[in-house]
Length: 456
Image (tube, rainbow, N blue to C red; front, side, top):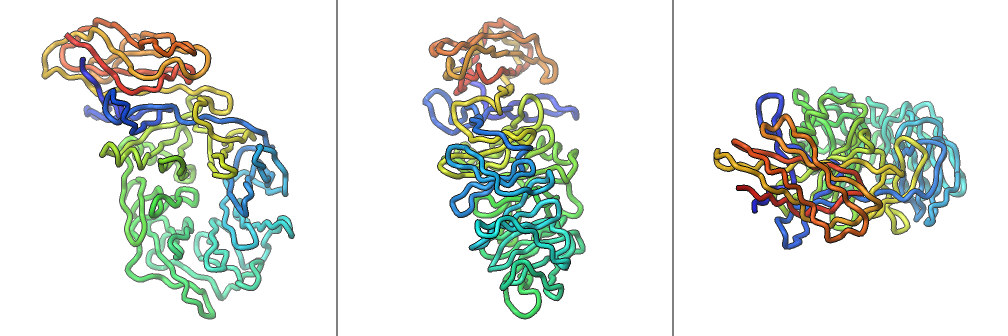
């Protein structure tokens, strides 16, 4: 028996090269089941829908022990049981940016700034000197925003007021400002090609001053393409002369860590449509890069355990990954639907995305017999069949050249058949090397620990 690696597959690329592929809707784990190596597959958590708002999810936040969420044009409080209480109306469809002080929640969307508090309800900042609000943060008593050119702070004594003599700017590079982020008590001003650090120094004018020699020579593509992550922050961007990549940064430095497939996808995507999300729960930190047709997820813990960067891809029914904007509240992982008003929470053991079971797929690493011909007598997935729901099929196909694939062969998997062996017997002859592809839907997901192949 030969065991074939699972974490990433190998196929032929368009430039006559071998390239890695990454599993779709299968999350690698690093649990040692004493069957194979530490890399295994499980289903990412699905959704339990608890209600429906009047439009697509625009983001959520935990504020003063309340789960606040914007669904369509409704600012809502989501109760522990999933009940929805409409607090106010916020026009628009754009994803919201939240920042809060000790007594109010700031909400930036559609270039406008709103505050919400239990005593005053929802109010809009209408001071002309505020300008357009591209992004929002709260730091040292100030609500800080940017219009893409200047950095603007509200008055300490009155957050509804802005003084034009207290505008700031990021002047180390003439690139446009794309966002703001607070990290370790300092304000990071993201430009398109640089990131400058500001520290509060007080005074009568703009109260923040650039920290010298701390500018990062990479910038961010838009306000939604960054997030706090681990002991720093992550963002999608580039240098002035470079292509897009994923970076993790902090304290004057940033390092790229995107794989080739993701970078190619980023560079053919409209920069304004890229979003970044951090999901930190259980014993794993997940960084999600949302694109219009799929999302990519990086796993910090698994990557450390197996000694290599571990990514996988997510889609909902062959298109955009619809589960967005996770918020930890009331002991649950609350999420919303990017295409409808559905909202609810993530739950392990569920396979569906808002009622639809997505397809999963992975290619295994190549089997090579030192250039000698060989016959594949059997291929078997070792795992946990019989879970999930109902009945489903797992399809297997093989390749001799990394590009064209054989006719698929199917195995039926039913709920309760926990001892069934997921085995194919192709008795196929190969002259050099070969590869495998497996796919199915949620009901057939077996929880995969190993792929064993018998050759002769």
